[in-house]
Amino acid sequence: MGDGKRAQVVLVTGAAKGLGKSMVLGLIGAGFRVAAVDRDRESLEDLRATVEADGQAGQCEPFVEDLCDFDAQALVSRIVQKMGAIDILINNAGLGQAQVRDDYHRNPVKFYEVTPQVWKNAINVNATAVFLLSQAIAPSMIKAGWGRIINITTSLGTMLRGGYCPYGPTKASAEGLSAVMAADLHGTGVTVNVLIPGGVVNTPMIPSGAPFRREDLLQPDEMVAPLLWLVSEDANHMTGQRFLATKWSASMTPRDAAASAGAPIGWKDIAVLPVTPAFVKN
Image (cartoon, rainbow, N blue to C red; front, top):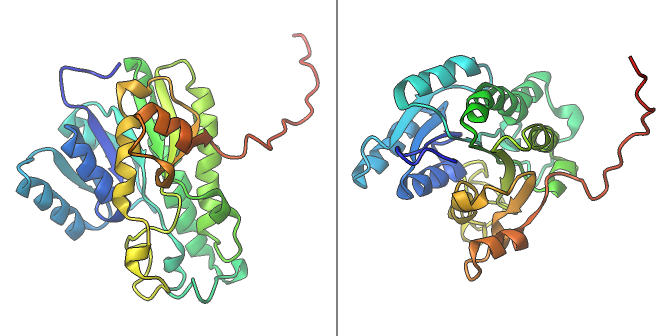
C-alpha cells in the first residue's frame, strides 16, 4: 500500500501544459505532491505560480528536462533527493505531428517525408523515455510493495492511421511496452495502466490553425477523474488496462465507470502467441 504517513509523490512528464497541467492540478487538489517535468522552463514556472496562488506552495516542484536526450537515473535521483521516494509515475510527455508541420490535419504527413531526426525525437520522447523512467523507478516501487505507472498513449486508430507517422507508431511502441510492463510487474503491488483522452483534445499539441473550433474538442480536465481513481487504493487490483477518459461517466461509481471505460492494453483481443516448441530439459 502507499505510505499513509506522507503525501505521495507523483512524477508527471510533459507537465507544464495541456493534459499534463490538468493532471498536475487535479493531483495537487487531491493532496499529492508533484514533480513536474517539462522542457519548457517558463511554462513550468507559470504552473508553479498557479499552484502557489491556490495556496498550495511546496506541492509542485519543477524539473526542467528535455526527454529527447536525458539521463533518467540522474533525473530520478534529483527528484528523490528533493521530494522523497516516487510513488506514482505518469508518462505523459509526447511529441505530435506538429513537429513535422502545423497544417498536418489538412496536409497529412507521408512517412517518407519524416526526417530521421524527427523520427528519433518522437521515439525518444513517446517511447524510450517511458522505458527509461519506468525502469529507473520500478525497483523502488517493487521494494515498497506499492506503486503506479500510468502511460498516456493515444487512440488505437491513431496509431495506425495514415498521415500519423511518427506520432502513431511511436505511441504504439509505448502501448506495447505498457502491456509487457504490466505482465512483468504482476503480483508486485505495482500496477501499470494506460489512460487516453479518447479524441482530439484542446491542448497546444493541436496547432492554432487546425480545422476545428476549440470548444468542440475534448477538454484536458476530462483526464482527472479516471486518473484520480487509478492512483487510489481502490484501484489496487487494476493493472494491464487502458481507459478512455471520454467514456468515463461521472454518474457511475468509480468502479463502474472504470468497467465501462476500460479494456485490456493494446490488441489482446486479436493477439495470437507464436507457435513455440517445448523447452528442452537441461
